[in-house]
Image 1 (spheres, one colour):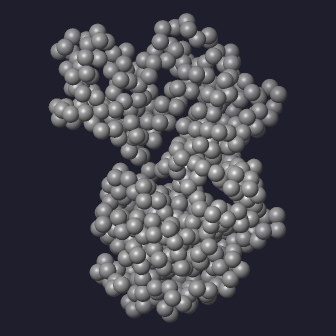
Image 2: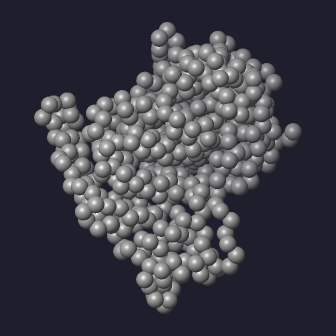
Image 3: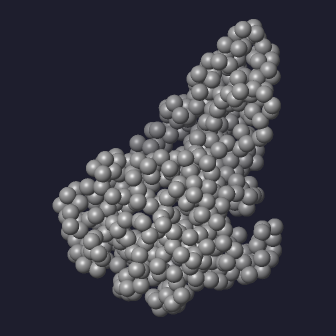
Length: 288
Length: 270
């Protein structure tokens, strides 16, 4: 299938940083505006993580008011469930995207809540890795793209355990091909998945529609042990694991339509993330 | 499975029985059964955080419940209850399931039923502001109709209900100042509450959007009229209901007009 004009026409954003609602209230939080002013050659856009319940915070609005580039990362849509795309959510998301002038709409494509969208229901779970689930997600992505008139970029979520027989990349290959959308490969999440199945970091790379990868994420994590079960927590620490870097390097050589890289490091001291911002900019210059 | 380890264990050991009634094929059941039970234990505080969020919306009801039962385990048991599992299986509301669970305990506390109704209505109204209200999804009648706006509720409770709630909240506030006090034998306790059935019923309108408690006292007629407008209702019937509450035809029309102007009702075709 040929690529949609929305994907081909998406701007090259360079390297960005992510943020979540009221992140500034946490003990350590990077001020993206200050960081961009300090390092204009390293920080090119902001990925705004928000939901329709709370909307945008002052920090996000400050960045958007400066007219700097953004992408919108939803935190409240079950892309795995078509029925989750209700008119109220679409209307509010459309307003947020318009206010930001977001280049595209992305987000972990699985479950952000169990059942209906309600405050107590918040979770982050991956989809069930089956063909029928991928088909439903592809339909949801198409509906979303039409409703928002935007490029939709689903992301592979993190998890301690995954349900279903498919490999994560085979699952999302079906979603992005049938859904005619972009893909956000979170390198750290994929490394977590591969490790959870005892696979090497680059398993199932062959055959993936890499031309649809428009964005990469990378972040640090921490190994944990629960009753002997070894797992990786996606903590967004400064230093990504060697496996995550391996995924990143391999993806970079394959993703010919790559537009953006996000270093998810918002809750760390600036001096601890500077070197990795340099490394990512060397790998993926804003003007390619 | 994330909230109920006993159920998770059953799903892993006997998936056909534990997952019966769910729209799952053999492969999907097998996939679930292949999970490692330890993966459900990586977040030991999940239930507590969920309870925290539920209790935050039902603070007085939960305080009265704990005051009678005296065991946090009675709240934790919610996650093994039928109401919780039914809500999870049917894409329902965990909040509504929790209120149903509290009712299912059939406690003796005479103040609890009305307190729970107030806190539940506030929570339901909050949810209606976030997603389309199911009560408004019914096919509208022919001609002009009105309905209570999303996020607006109305109910009538015992006249002392707000006083009970204030009394309990004051104790909870004291405890929040020094949470460790809860461990002490002389920790602040909820004083005896006045008996129900003495003061006349109190009509309330619930509107969390306005902030504060979200509770408004707009009089008996307004509350009664709003309470009847759950779903799309023909204007003629709404006017009739208002007249049945004691208004003249002209005042009934003026009332609907005022309610629409205040955003308390939706109007269509009038």
